[in-house]
Length: 216
Image (tube, rainbow, N blue to C red; front, side):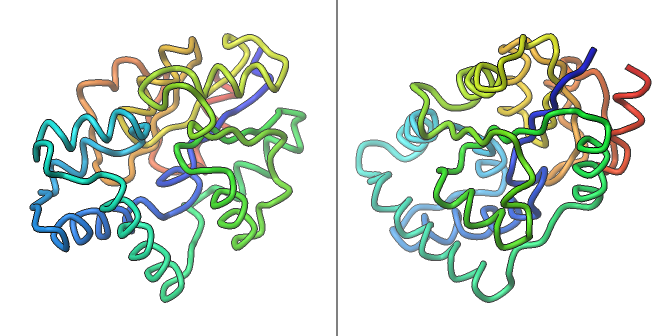
């Protein structure tokens, strides 16, 4: 029996992954590096140490990750200030359905807790989750299982009692490695063939999530 659903944040609950797709290449370009779109897509949901290693692999020791990341945050906040943050289609309906049916709701995100709380508050979801866990507070971020294992621990459940909802390969790997069933809801790419076999279902929007849970 499913007792909890644990959501990724960016690109799953919040329609914000598209902003990262803009600001990471801009931040890299500012410091003289070219981050292609294919490169960016590999970074989605990556925990910080893994992102650091990938940038060093691409650009060498001259790449100052902390400096570029800090500038990326500035660009991101400017975009958010100008355009705001919106929910992904079906997010509110899915969360309301889960609450009405006594299913716990949690977040497992690569975003730090301060920004997660601020962004959720901006869309009226600051009181919509039973637990919020950030990979920034775990030893290893996604695709390692740590953040999902921590969310499950805080919920007081077994991984087999939880479903993860993810939009990106690194998040799918993280949840699967933690022993959760995974539902894939595409965001920046319609297909992720290398990891879709790990998912119990693929849905177009979060409006379809209740049906997946009901049908098991």
